[in-house]
Amino acid sequence: MTAELVWAVVAAAGDGRRLGHERPKAFVKLGDRPLLAHAIELLEGHPRVERIVVVVPEGWEEPTALLADELAAGKVAASVAGGPTRALSVAAGLREVADAATAVLVHDAARPFASEALVDRVLAGLEDADGAVPGVPVSDTVKRVRDGSVAETLERSELRAVQTPQAFRAEALRRAYAGPPDDISGATDCAQLVERTGGRVVVVEGEAANVKITDADDLARAEAAVRGAA
Image (cartoon, rainbow, N blue to C red; front, side, top):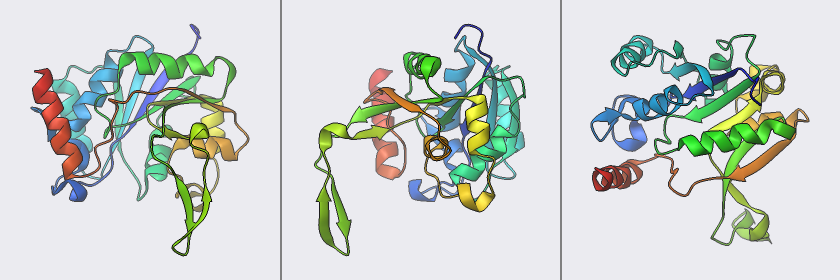
């Protein structure tokens, strides 16, 4: 994939209420930096990533640009306002991606511990697929439940918990997001939409450390991990 032109979209438009903060989640501090800084630095430092689009809550575009300047993140091409759901926020970011881009990475600012090697793996997964997502095995038994009763016990060996960053052929991702907003708004990740439009998505090895910061307990554990690594 040496000829690919890779752009990245960082989804960072969530609010901070579940973290117990009034400011947006991406601007809550982890260590001495906002969560968003970790995602920007990962992509800024990766040699395959050409440009970055950051999607933030409305009104936070200028603070994002200032953060990029502070980080000397020259790859940040734009910061734009997101939508009411993650999928619509990604759609807003995708509109800022250059037409010349041939591959698009989508990463959540809420996953601050993703590694450069993980970016390498998802990009390599595009060799023979429309999309590539990192996944980790599910250790718990998972049951499908209807009306409070178990309807089915799923085969655990076939299940993966999927993470970001996810990588896609640009044309496949654009096609997936070309439908009406109501058709895409409820998707929980980009791969779901690419699958729905007939794209082939492969799973590569994820990382146990690549946790998602969702609530205050997650943030506390992440803070402990940062302090332990210092």
